[in-house]
Length: 316
Image 1 (spheres, rainbow, N blue to C red):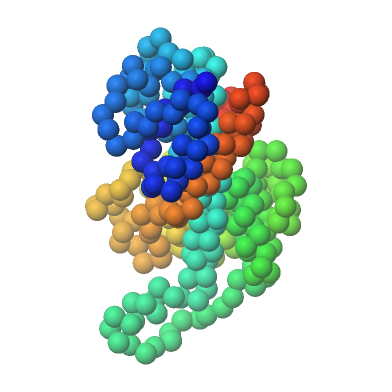
Image 2: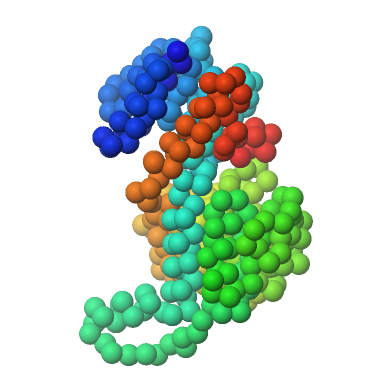
């Protein structure tokens, strides 16, 4: 019998599904209540994360596997987890459709000027002062060819866009017309009309989008970040937008969240700001447990969980 501790609040239908799936095991639901590091340390599997879990790792413990409820794990003690040989699986892919669909929304807003139309409604203005166009035939550079990037590329192919993916390996991925390596970014930035950042935050990607990166982009290009705020040098993004080094941007993630009210980004006319909402979807937790139970079957057979298992050397 495997002892599993759940730390996340679940609505009743999903909680019952979890209880049913773990009926032959020892499920302890600590969500919505105060709990101690000792209680967590006694579990073999932990669903969720909190500072108390970090405390439990410092105690004698039985922890063998942690199921995160986020896709990013840059705030986890990865070195300690690696040292203790604890499996860490993520929620990667659970909100991929949501993030991809919101990104399509940014691009459609850019070419169809829907935000401006909404603003004119407030002032009861019937006006069409904009050059409206289409996404048809445009080139889009998607940094990150994982779950979000792959689904997004598929959506954008429906608009007859030319999809270029960038990844560490450069291997071919479904829905991309071509895939290049990160080392080839400098060659691709000048020709892409849209640059979309879906990257995780790692040592290699932190501060990637800086003045040098932005300076290589096409002057008429539009930048979107739905990945991690730390991959941007925010001041450099601000300067590029202010000086019109690039045409515009849509940002859903930031170095500091909530974005401070005194951030100069708020004042720019050529930016769309959303409060880290691209990943919000009512499908999220259900998908996480789809992944969890897929891995749990393997785990009970003495195998390691494979779906969304973190590679500690790569950081994702």
